[in-house]
Image (cartoon, rainbow, N blue to C red; front, side, top):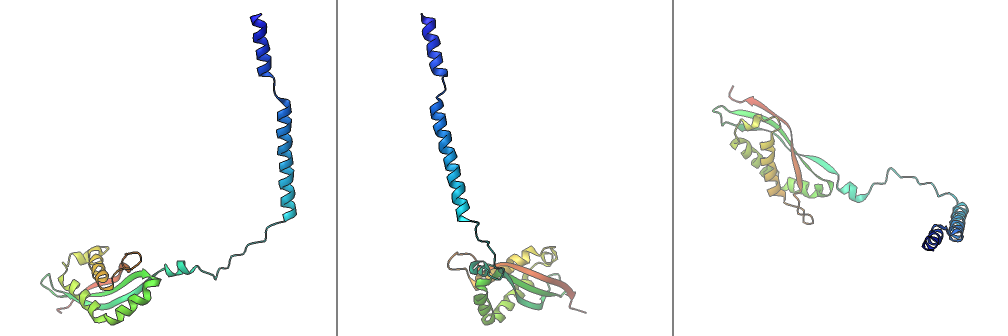
Length: 174
């Protein structure tokens, strides 16, 4: 008798509810037909065409620009002989800060040139022989940050980087 009850319990558990499966399948088929019909009635989406001339104003304002700071010959006599360094110094800044920095540059042109000349006169000549001129660039950038200040909104320096295009040494005591 116990075996008969156990086999009845197994038959009840193993019986698949066909009615529920048919209802779920029919609902899924109806949903598929409904969605397909809705997309067919709506039609194709309109084609999208990008305007290459239109630039985002924020992206344009954040573009980096290079500006010439000074192009001159600076002396250094730390080795006992006077050498002239024919130099071009550029700064890298954001377009949105360009007008402000260039206006300040016009007002402080002599001061900027004087500060860079002071750096050249006081720097060790071995540092002027570095392949990347990293020490010279760092010292000039510190002066630029001091002169031009920082952005009020972000607190970042207006001058992002100092670039030295050329720094050619010549003997001046011939």
